[in-house]
Length: 162
Image (cartoon, rainbow, N blue to C red; front, side, top):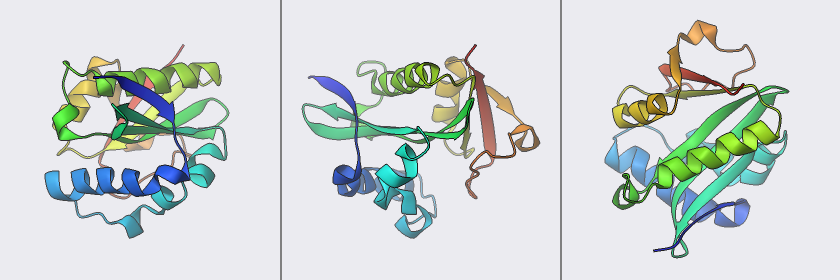
């Protein structure tokens, strides 16, 4: 199986929405809708506008994962929309790691010094993955003032890039 990570834009919105909403609503029973995530309908305008990006992971041409970077100030970015289809998770595929490595490499190239993310406690495996990759949990009050907060998030992490 060939895994490819590449930047994607609005032409993949329908596939992105299907992937993300299925994981959020069906797999984890998170009470979130498309209306709560208008960024998914405007990938290019929302993520690329300030120097961020949105990547898709493709397994033999099928979209199986996503990750996005919001550059919210000159030296910091927020990770958003990190999702991998259940059947493609785990070390044997390494898709989550490829997605995160792509985002970190791009962040360094853009001159960012810090990455931040917010998530929810129910996503324990995701938190372990981030911590394994050097992210440290921080208090909500420790987030930069300009961090793009999501209302559902209750766990926050930081990864210094220097």
